[in-house]
Image (cartoon, rainbow, N blue to C red):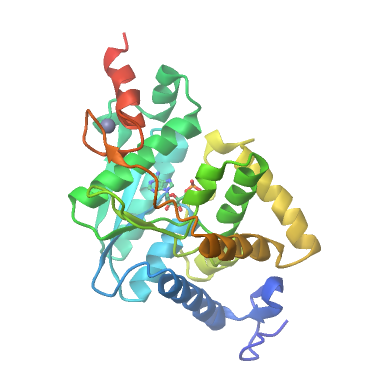
Length: 300
Ligand code: AMP
Ligand code: ZN
């Protein structure tokens, strides 16, 4: 198999673009897709300070790597969830990556800051671990980015993540979620920081290949709490469709973005207010984070 761009030995086939790439052209391809994402959705400008949420997985570490290569000023933020070996390994690999590139990494431990890890928070509040984890991550991503003066928060969500989330939202017609599913969400409250997903144009296997050829040491293990989740089932279904007809995922998600743009489903009219307890942005009177923490404080 030869690279369609330069004729060298190809390392990855990209059926949806009917092409194959060598190591150098894979890097070029990934950087170009990220540049295009940043440009098309006006994610940030050269002088902006970007906080990259890094889990230790291939997507977020690759994202951080790409943004540094493109010359952006970045720092990483890792939330330690306290899920045993998985969380320890995630923290270790994230810290090693930051050290190897001499960049700042902010580490926020739920156990130390909130007084309980994800599993305990879930149990105290009768939520699923993923729901409690989601609230803790979103809240801390935003608060830390805002308090430390970052212009934007970037996550490693890729095309597979976005397509499977879209499928899940459509299957249950969660229109309010559909409105908020976008590669860039602007700050609609003085304490909200803009959120962006610069990898949304890239498929999971393309990012895995990028991480491998660039020797990025990432956590391979999936979060043990995600086993059997709807998100993973949706991904499997989309992978089957993709194998049968390459380009299906791309057409599905990009078709949605076109329709969203045409109908302005950007969620800009959602009413954001300040939480009565902590002052952080929320759509309810008291935010989910404060409601969870209330349970931690009153726990026997
Ligand atoms: P996930 O929901 O696990 O697929 O993660 C989606 C994105 O959220 C990742 O690409 C990261 O940017 C971010 N993320 C997930 N877990 C963490 C974590 N523990 N700390 C910091 N960022 C995270
Ligand atoms: Zn609050």
